Every structure is written in structure tokens, then in C-alpha cells.
Image (cartoon, rainbow, N blue to C red; front, side, top):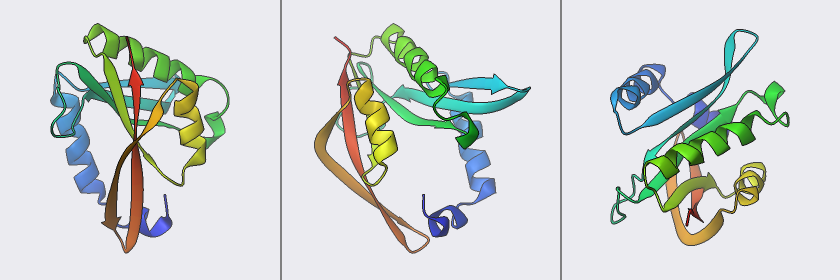
Length: 140
């Protein structure tokens, strides 16, 4: 993420969003711990996009690991666990939004079988435009 975008984020707003997310029984969060601290997380649940069946379509909202924990398998294990829970939730399809410039994330999702859809959105914040592409994974 560009620094200007990150600088535009409000800690208070993010905390409020996370509290709401954690209170919702349909939204799930998994964490990975190392050295007695959280070093990675995944957040997922029913799809948020309008027009899709929230009972059969899931979404990975975010998956993140501290940079010093990249390439050690934590992200892979979190994604595998997230997809397992989404299967238990009877999701037949999973969606994820990815920045079109984030080749590392695109490659990560493609390793799990996600493919790009012809659907994009643009978010403007902090004077920065972020273009995202929706990826999809069939779970059947």
C-alpha cells in the first residue's frame, strides 16, 4: 500500500471496524502466533458484494503476515485453515479482492486456484487510487 493511503487511515476507525467484525458471529478471524505475539491473521466470512448469495459464497477479507514471517508457510497454513472453515460454512465459491499491482498477493492466491474475474473496483483515499481485481475459487 502506498504511504499516502496508509497515512489516510484512522486508527480509531480501524479499531471500530475490527470490534464490529469480531462481534459478528458470521465473520471469522484466525491468527498465527510466534514469539508470544500475533504475527499473521486471516479474516473471512460471507461475501460482502451485492448480488451474490451470502449463504454459498464466502470471501477472504484480508490475510496478512509481518514481513519477517513471509515465506515460512504461515500464510499458506492460514489460507488452508480459512478455506476449511469456509467449506464448513457450506461455501461453494470464495472471492477475494486483490490490488492489481500486488503481484506477490496475486501469485499467492493463484497457488490456491483463485482466478481473476472481469470485475474491478477503484478506491480513492489519501489522494491515491487503488484498483482491485476480484478473484474467485470454486470449492466444488
